[in-house]
Image 1: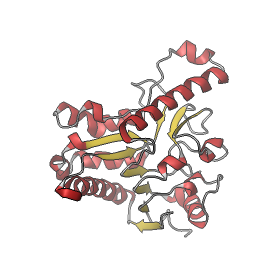
Image 2: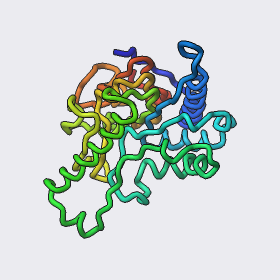
Image 3: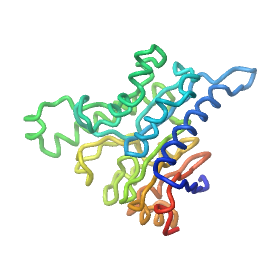
Length: 267
């Protein structure tokens, strides 16, 4: 169980800038590590998510000189959660990340497309979506979740480990797509789950589970703004409270919230 650390920056923009700089430095450090026998690390695995703070950090990465120094052929990108919508839907976390940074790296021949591990998109038409009942939708989400599980295991082994996860936290305390009042936050026998009737639109999602995310070596939350103050206070007051899903967040190394004074006001 990792110790929770709080780092307070003066502004929301500073949180995003610091997140970008820290992520690039951490990737560069890991790629430069000398392992036993003088070998270098073969790969670095990073889990991303959506949210305004994380997307802003990716925007800053796109213009950061450090981005051009990284061997992106050895970096693999995953998603801690995804909105189960069409591949070209603006709500897609992966699409936002591609627009901010990843598509440019691919176009420049620096990041192999195969290193971008997207969760499945919804390929149904509008009529089929509208006609689907919960049983049908749950089965579709479950198969998409199992497909991502298989990819994780194929790439990283039976117990997949992310080197870094860059997370956000909602005002309700959710992280990834693990929401209060939903059973998914307490699931312990899956790596990825489908989420139906999300309280935050869009309603269909896929999410890594709390036990999988807890295997991450470094988990960082970019959490800025007064709207996060109540959730942050509850998360730091207890652990593993389903009413505040981010209280389940854990890591095997660093567990840090990068935040602003107004978000930390109740601590």
